[in-house]
Length: 149
Image (cartoon, rainbow, N blue to C red; front, side, top):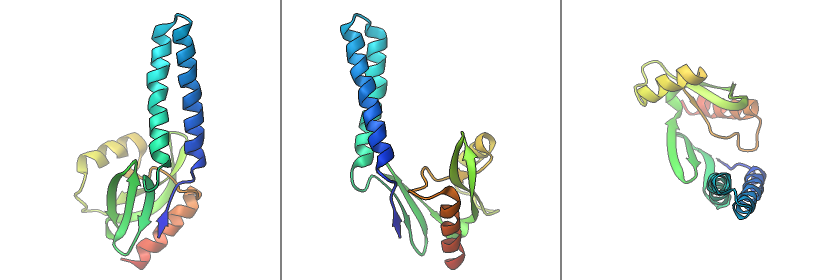
């Protein structure tokens, strides 16, 4: 099963970032180069991220018998079903995401898990909810986890 994020949020990011790039160009033309160039560079990165995010295959969540694979801006990482205690929705920085803690004895990514646990109170989280609510996606992932462990 493959889930992809809805493109609307990336289209909005593209439009807002492009507007701020245009504002930066205007500020440079008005003799305010520092703030103008900061706008152009910072929001230009937003334009680039939005464009890449809109390309096919750049972002998805793939579920199979072994576990889940996350692809975010073409970077892939995976988690085996048996390594997860349970999936649950949680708020991280005012955004509800699907999170999880690993089973006791799991030794992978030890330093990253410690840092994440101190910062967010969870060991790991998905970067998106792929068009679902966090609760619905957590339920779906738990169904897959139970079925395949």
